[in-house]
Length: 247
Image (tube, rainbow, N blue to C red; front, side):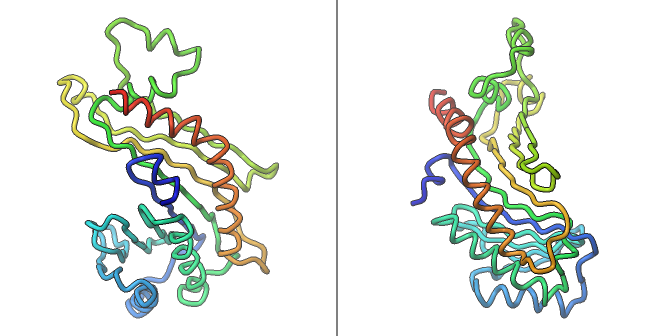
C-alpha cells in the first residue's frame, strides 16, 4: 500500500494533454485509439459518448481502483483512482502519450499544456467550508470575519498558483474544492460528500522538437511528488484528515 492511500479516503492521478488544434473525431480513428488502449487494459470495456460529444473509455465504476480515459475536442485525459502505487497509474498515462503522436497526429508543437495532477478526496458529513477554515485557518486579515457571532462559512476554497520558472511556463497549483451549499447550511442537513484537494504541475507551450510527451510528463511527476511531500502533505492533507477524525 502506497502512503498516499493513507492520507485520504481516495486518491487519484490524472494526466491532461491540452492541444492547440482540434483532435480527430473520425469514427475509425477514435475506435482504433481506444481499441489499442483496451488491448493493454482489457478491463476498460465501457465505451460511450457524452452528451457534449466527448468520447470515454473506462472500467466498471464499482471497482476499488478505477481507470478511465476521455478524448475531448482539444484535450486528452487519463486517470486512475486508488492505484496500488502511483507508478501503476503513471504507466497508463505514459502509454496514452506514446500513442497520441501517431494515432491522433498530435506533435510536440501542438501542445498547449501538459498536466500531472494528484487528487485526494476526504469524505465528510457537515459544513465543508467551516471544516476547511478550522483545519487550515484563514489569513490574519480575515480572522475577524470568521469570529462574527453566528456567522458560518459558505464558500471557503483556498487555492494558489505558483510559477516555478522565470518564464512562467512551469506552474504549480493547489486547489481545495468543497461541496456545501447555502441550503444545506440553512437546514443543518448535510449529505456525506467529498472535500477534494487537487495538486497540479503544468507545463505550458509547445515542447522542443526533440522532446517527447512521456519524458516531459516524467519531469512533471518528479516536481509534483517532491513539492507535494515537502509542502502539501503535512501542511494541508494531514490537518484536514485530523480535523475530520475529531468530528
